[in-house]
Image 1 (tube, rainbow, N blue to C red):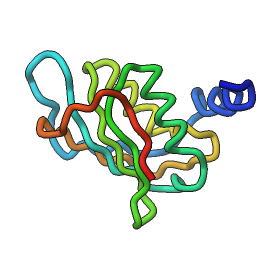
Image 2 (spheres, rainbow, N blue to C red; image 1 turned 120 degrees about the horizontal axis):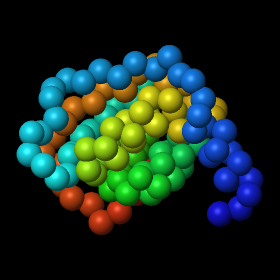
Image 3 (cartoon, one colour; image 1 turned 90 degrees about the horizontal axis):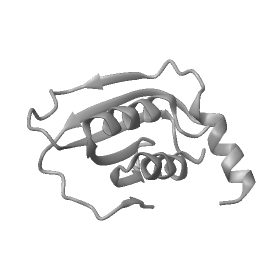
Image 4 (cartoon, rainbow, N blue to C red; image 1 turned 90 degrees about the vertical axis):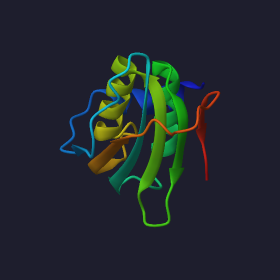
Length: 123
């Protein structure tokens, strides 16, 4: 990855955010992988959010997908261990792209999410 992209991504890592995380249910109690879907709202389209989310997922070992929705939100499915998933949710709250401005992340734990071989970015 070029230095321009690396610099762009690093700007988003430690920034502050007023984004709110809303959990609609409790995580699964069994040990091992956690599965969650997220609806992220705010200024999250056209700002490199999906690219940055994929990079964050790859760094944390998260599998799943990210895609833009027609209503202006971003949809994410994420599968990983409890600690990594928690870190990923926090990255989504901050907005992994420095140009993003997240209002809220609605998280629903869902054991029915299909396993993915990696983390992909959909159109």
